[in-house]
Length: 222
Image (tube, rainbow, N blue to C red):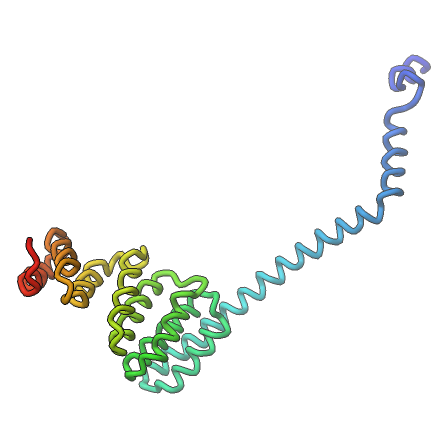
């Protein structure tokens, strides 16, 4: 019995297990408020994350609902009603993909209505949206068209150049290069470069003849 007790005791005869319990209790007594605060903070943060996720899901559902209504109104020719719903999504859910899409749709509608200033406002909102996605490149093209409607060719060119560099507009690369060639027709060197790029691109066969004709028209040397 004495031998077992000595084996489980420390050099000074103390019991490590008992000492650990006493030490832990003493530590908690001194730092209890800090520990409780940390646990409470963890619980609050965990609850906050769950609340945020629930709110995010609710916002997405609302955005989907209003966007769906807007599309139905748009297809039915109820443009004013569609604009109201698109505005709700674009303003209240601007950080979602549907917010960017709604802003793009509004820019497109105002462009069709020959209101380039409003179109520019909403296309810019689509471009700067938190999750613009593939809409970004199309919105940049929309901005270029709106500025061209206003007679502001330099801004139209600037936004098309941005679209050309934007990955989301990669599938529109040939169309954008052709528009840039046309807008730069008074600058033979720049227009010629875009035309030559199109002619050299085997995926741009639809623009080969157009580019060759424009190249000849601007007098650029091949």
